[in-house]
Image (cartoon, rainbow, N blue to C red; front, side):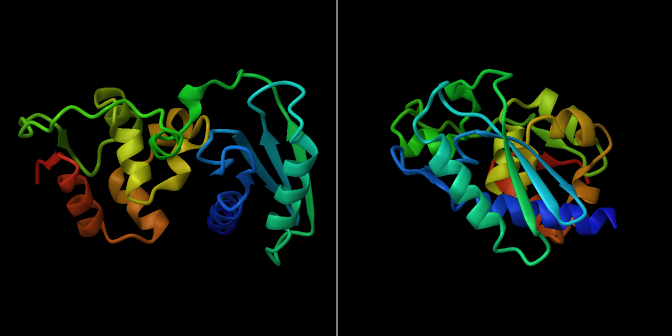
Length: 189
């Protein structure tokens, strides 16, 4: 049952990635506006913040979110709950959103990777994220989209490993490893 709920949360996130801020032309997930998704029975609650209080897009986003999520046959009711804490800042945006908005830091010329970004497929995700600052973004970039849900790394990440995460997402572990190797990581096996 829990696996079905996680799959449904993934589907909700996919739908929310199609809801764009009409002024910025970036989806609300990559903008970091989605603070949580709760599913109970056939109802879905989306905890959402806005870039500023009194944002004139509140009603528009509310309608677009409901329309997008109600496309899922497993959901009959959607509630959008505005939350204001923690306060939204541009740091909540993904690198992809920052690039789209021209806010990404200029990348320094790539130097050859130095050994040291060593991963083990059975180490908890939180441990790896604490050790390597870019790890969460790298995981997001290779398809682990749930990793950026607020609180995901500090809760589920304490137990979830690369091996378990790949299995839960239906990814081949060898493909995940190859993608991370391309991002400059090494494996000890």
